[in-house]
Length: 89
Image (cartoon, rainbow, N blue to C red):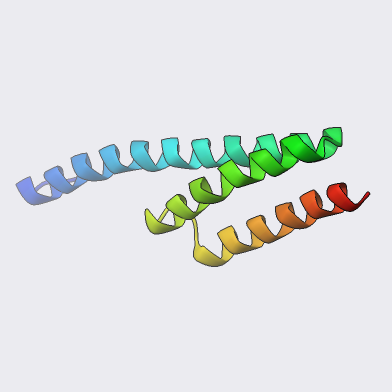
């Protein structure tokens, strides 16, 4: 438990930042889910649009420190491969 004024303040700051990070992570997951659902439904145009809106959101998560850079790159790579497979099929 925090005892000093400084540690109490840090605990409050961490609590606020955790809430912000949680909201960001949730938002990113929502965008990714929209892309996955569009791929599963077979709608190439919707999947492409969803991917274009999800990419900047995921990269914003990287700059904010919510998602690791390699994780974001891997997710974008796999989703774009799925969208590309839809377009060719």
